[in-house]
Length: 356
Image 1: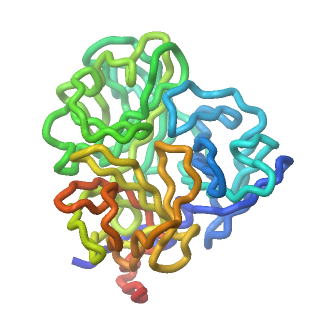
Image 2: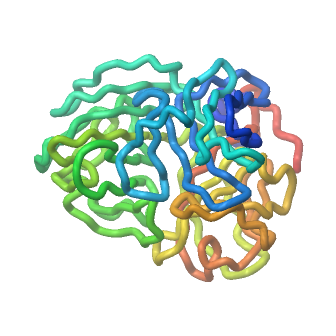
């Protein structure tokens, strides 16, 4: 059945932008069809080895976490210092703005920084919501209690839910649950860590028996999600037809790899093998403006852009694997993915996309 969407211009809610560092005041301006004031900025140096950087409006600018490590947030006045009407402003930090280096920034709009208390769970959360785009972000304090529940405000069971501790003691991995895909739906304890290459794991200290509902997430006492005297941030996404998709596919180990239908041309694609160890992998439509894409980055690694092979086609209604890499197309492997759109396959008025 043809995709049908309520979002004809995905650049209202997601954009990917390239820029060059200058080790000084640097304004990064988006180039999409719509202005986008970001609430999430996730960036990476493409040209040399550097950590990923991650900022959001609910914790505020100048507070950086990094997807490739388990540490707390840094109070960083030299990184992202302002979310602007159509982009963001950087100070002189090397991680975000090293002179002459090439960078990429993936940005999501939520609601411009409007925060509300959510009391649906046992623990009150502070949340920002954008139901049209199927995303909420929030923060809460841990209490080390089993069966603790936190309200997420999404109004639907999240297809992708990620928690990261950003203050307090102990190691805190980026913990991910995807209850609506088969490889992670069998039991409430299935998790992935964004900052490791581990396969799906069972950890009953993370999710509770009820786990994810349309209003709350039940968490146990594990320090990854609920340690006393620690603060946590969370990100919840639900599938929006023609705009966003969480799913999985099975690899075939061939250069003529599987085609995966999303209902849109992907602007952003992140994937992870779930049945075995393997790196997280990221593609987008800005580092590569045509097929076959040759640029990939790894959320769990500090590596520069890897451009050694043909990897994937980004098509008007999905994507197709073009190599045998074990991270995303080993024969018989199961791979989960999170994708956001450049353009829907079919518009809200029923007009199909031009084939490409």
